Length: 297
Image (cartoon, rainbow, N blue to C red; front, side, top):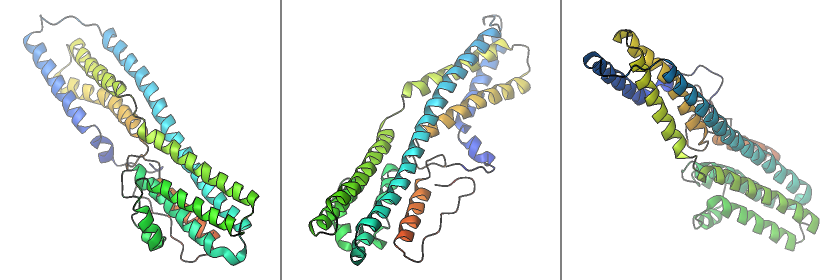
């Protein structure tokens, strides 16, 4: 997630450097055609590129709104994961007898790994990286046999709660309450996976790029009396504004793509670990991850 800090110019321009190069080539090609075949080119009034620029603005506005909605929904999902993770431990603290707190610790550690594994799985990374510091070898061996690791962790916690219920350490009402929290965590996981697996319509990006290039060509033809040393930078600056907004929308529409614009799942999972281990009265709590200059992952 980008922070309220100065963003390096190289990061910004690096997103559109190839597009700007293509725009420069198009501008030079059109200028060369104008110089050689000026009387064969149509007389395009400035109103035509202005109309195309307006259409681009409308499409960009729609795409930015839809992309931000996806990013914000992802952030709300992970906010819900924070809340439900805390609720799970608080409920277990209230329901499980003090003599059986070892079970509380095992379930709490699995919940920490669940948050970390879900974030890594959404980013296409190894879900169980570093999980050996919190899970038993038996749990790890069981999870490595699961194709969907976060779902496997929820199943293990559900089975653990069922054993506590059969042993008389949880009454029926408490068992239902804790199971409803696990069900909510499963629902939040499904919501995040829906965003990850639902592709934003590719046609928006293709049509938008087509309109931008069409806009540059018509604008270059319509400004016949401007020298190249002024016309080319003008085309590049105007197109850069459209391209940067389009890139921003593209990054926001994929909030789990391991980019600086991502939902900060690593930082959130670390916060959840700090909260859960505090509730477990453990020491040597992890520190919040330091921002990488202008963003946090």
